[in-house]
Every structure is written in structure tokens, then in C-alpha cells.
Length: 105
Length: 237
Image (cartoon, rainbow over all chains, first blue to last red; front, top):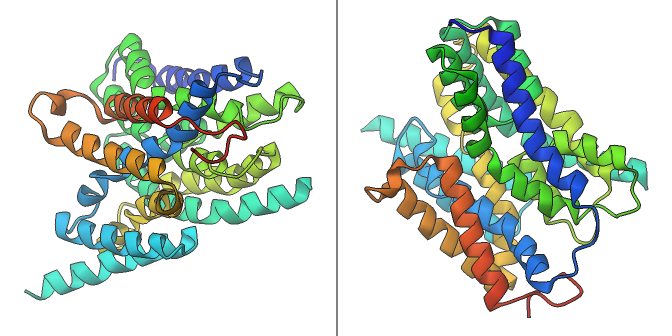
């Protein structure tokens, strides 16, 4: 490490904060454009979906099979409109059980 | 009103914090094994509150990369927060004092944004503060514990916890996708593109943070043109 670690942390934190802060502070007026409004309405769904799949398949130690078990369990629970915590815990439980079962063979 | 929002934020922040513990624990372990102190690792988490950006930043620190490299990497990986921040700017009433926006901005993470963005109507900053009050300590504590002890929790528990965040994401996007056809197509389209970006030979080279930006712009952009929402800003036609 030839550079100062605290300088690195400062640079990281500053860049990350500016990215988060500038749009929310500068774009204060209500947007009138219907297309822009529609775009912003769809952004969270597009973003969260892209982050979830296929990343969930490689998140676990047990590989894609236990990740897939977590995915399927979460999909079913989310489809039944369970709460956030419930869906998250069901996904964790499915991964846990699958990894134990895989360990038996 | 304000305390109600704060309380609801605290409640919704709990699953976020639990999911964060697992991820930030891993970050803490990696930082400590790379030679950073427990304090330094925790400081990074407290001041950055972002997973992908921190992992990328850590690898630059450990490799002794330049500050410019650090700036560019953080910019690309975290550019999705720019979209989220822009989206959230419309969810806060214009008459809310400006300093709230500076504070809310610090807590724009994938999960906190996900919850506040899909809330019906406007969002009160107190709701975000509630989530931040649980999620940020959770994120920092996980890092602290991970750095402190690389064998605090057995591996199989960590492995199971690592899907908690994705479970939450699905709990956010699936119910609206059930009722709303365009949202369903956005969700399926994003997932298909995301798979393509992680597997296709040339596209694989693109960092995952950058891929998410491209995918979000594409699917949300197409949906906005093909099925614009009604003026009341709740449901597409």
C-alpha cells in the first residue's frame, strides 16, 4: 500500500456521496414530462430485478442448486405476498435445507 | 405523523440490517485478511454504505491503485445510485426543507431506495431516517464483527444468510408484477438481460455495476415509451 489508506477512504466516500446527493438535491422541481415520470416509475423494478437474477444463483457456498432453491422459495413466498422479512427468511431456510440435503450425498 | 414514519422505517429497516450483516461480515473478513485494521474496515462501511463499491474499493486499496482509478471505479459501480437519487427526488415533497435531501442522500442504498421508491405517494424523510438508523449500524457492525473474527459464525449460516437480500428484492418486485403487466415485463426483461450480461462472451467483461445501469436504462426506458403511466403517477395504463 503506497498511498494513505485514509485518503482512499475519503475519496471513496466522497465520490459515492456526491453520486447519491447531487440528483436528489438538484432535481427538486416536480417533473412534468409523462415519459420521464414513467421512466422513474419503472426504474426500481428494472434495477432490483437485474440485481437479483442471476446473482442469487452464485451467492451461496453450495453453488447454483442451493441458490436456485432460495430463488424458487422466495418467488413462491413473494407471489403469496408475504412480508419482506418472511420472504427473506424463507429463502434463507430453503438454502440451508438444500445445502444440508446436498451434504448427505 | 413524523414519528409514525420513523417507526415504520425502523421496522422495515430490520430485514435490511439482517441481510446487511451477512454481506458486510464478508467485507470485514476480506478487509482484515488484506491487512486493514478492524477500525479501518468499519470506517469504510460507515462512510460508504455500499457493497459492490466497497469490495471494488478494497481491491484497489490492497493493490495500491491510483486515486484516479478509485474515483473512476466508484463512479461507474455506484452510478446506479444516481438514477435512484433522481427517482427519489420526485418522491419527496418539494416543500420539505433542503437539508433533509442532503441527509436522505447518504442512505440511498439498493435496499433503502427499493423500499422508499415503491411506497405509494410521497415519502417522508423520517421513513428513510428510520431505515438508515437500523441499516447503517447493521452494515457497520457486520463489518466490525467480520474483521474482528473470521470464524464468528459457521460458514453454513453465512451461506444461507447471503440470499436474504435477494429474497427481499423479490418481495418488493413480485407483488406489483403480479398485478401490473408492464411491471412484469420490466422484471422479466431485466432478469433476462442480466443473465445475458453475466454469461455472454463479450458482455461478461462489463462490470456488474455498469451492466445494471445499462439494463435499467434499457428496460425502464422501453417501458416508459411503450406503456407510459397515467397522470396520477400510480399505475400504467
